[in-house]
Length: 395
Ligand SMILES: *Cc1c(COP(=O)(O)O)cnc(C)c1O
Image 1: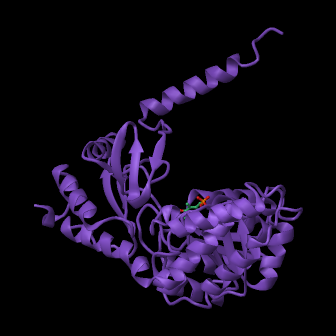
Image 2: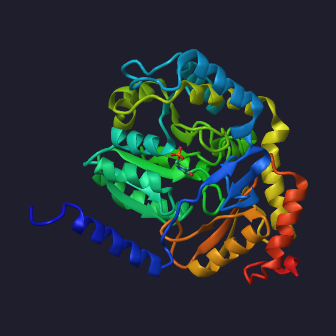
Image 3: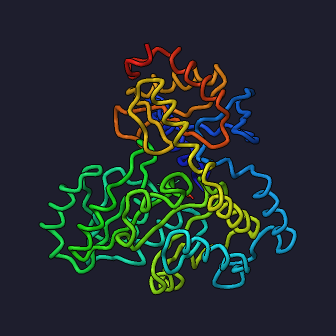
């Protein structure tokens, strides 16, 4: 052997990291211990987290945790195999029936995660001779599905129905099948897709509309998500989402017609060739959905807190629990995040490629489990940053 096997490999990784560091784009994993009510201990510091997607605090809800423990004791810590083999423990049927009913769809299928759902659903529906239209700001996990499908992809400007219509008019006829993919709620901006107008456009042009409701379920539309919030029932035949945000656990899902769900069981590779979720995870999601269905005040609280925060700082009124504060340069966003950590608040700075160039930002996520005084303290800490991005009300 003339080379140590890892010599060029380590050299590659080292050089790559150096470049990322120079651009302020190196990322690090920090050990983060979460507790109830958004308490977080990270980097030796106790903070209140305003960066979690646990919009209802259900990840630490005693009833949800108990459900996970009971199911783990009864069925084991793992599922043992793919769902198509022996990993399909009885709790799955209960969860899928619940999701379908809550979403007002015929059926649902649960995947290992939202990322796996997006990677599997899209290639199971469209391929080389087909067209995909996608909003330019769709979540990264959807891009994985687009690539794997091999379909021709056209992006339309964010939430721009007229632009989408232009592309459909020009290109739909040249392809066999067509799929449009959007986020229900955009995670970096907190705005909602115009699902009604997009749904009508798609219906007129035999194009299947798929929405990713990762941030909508449990937070808007009375908890039912973006389709309900936008009055687009019946117009979105493919409703994907995740169990890892407001549901507080882990897993992804698709709610659709019975026949589409049956197709996924045979054709979605990220369902067939991966192990089923642990039983405790599925049981936790069943319990979390029950709590969402029966607790309207809890569901309404995150958006209420987000509105209060935005109003106090002169920011535009949010429609969801997500409030972005665009700062611009990577280093400035990171400095603002560090200053908030110093004050006891965890607010992550998001940088490219997660967000477009020059729009590095703080993103605040509000949860039903935040106390009023947490939000009051956060408002003061953000004011103290003295950012020019803040509106007049901040003065
Ligand atoms: C978080 C997220 C996903 C991925 O879901 P996971 O269950 O975390 O893999 C997919 N789409 C959107 C819009 C998301 O925000």
